[in-house]
Amino acid sequence: KEKIKYIFEQHFNEEIDKIEPIESKVKLFLNSKIREYINQSVNIEREKAFVMYDDLKGLEGTELNEKIYIQGVMDLCIETDDEYIIVDFKTDRINNDEELVDRYKKQIMIYARAIKLSNSKKNVRSYIYSFHLQKTIEINE
Image 1 (cartoon, rainbow, N blue to C red):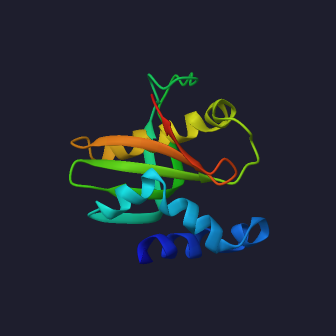
Image 2: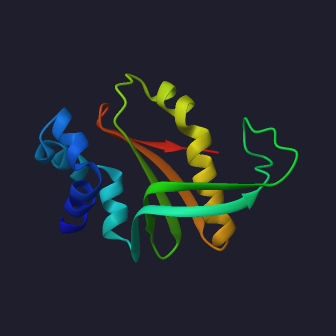
C-alpha cells in the first residue's frame, strides 16, 4: 500500500486534488490490475526517462525513412521476474476505451520499444490507467 500511495502522491498530487480527493482515487487504484504487478515487482521506476535511436519500423502509424533520437518519460515502469509492465496514467475525460487507445497507442508502443531495445530478454506489457474511466486498459501491439 505504501508503494502505491507514494506513486500517487509524488506523481498526481496536484492533478488529482483538482479532480477528486486522492483517497478515493487510491482506493479505486488498489483494486486495479496494476496493484498486482506492483506487489510482484522486483523494481519500480516512476517517471522513467529514456532516449533511443530507432527508425520505429513495424510500429503502426510511423513512416520514418531513417533512424532518429527519441526521448520520453514513462509514468510508471514495473519490473517483475519475467517482464516489464509500462503504465501510462491518463486524466482525460474520454468516455470510452477505444478513443483513449486511439489517442495514446503510438506513444505507449514507443515506450515499449524503448524497454525492448534496452532489455530484449523480458516480455513487455503496456497499459493505460484511466482515472476518468476508473479502469486499466491493456494496449496490444
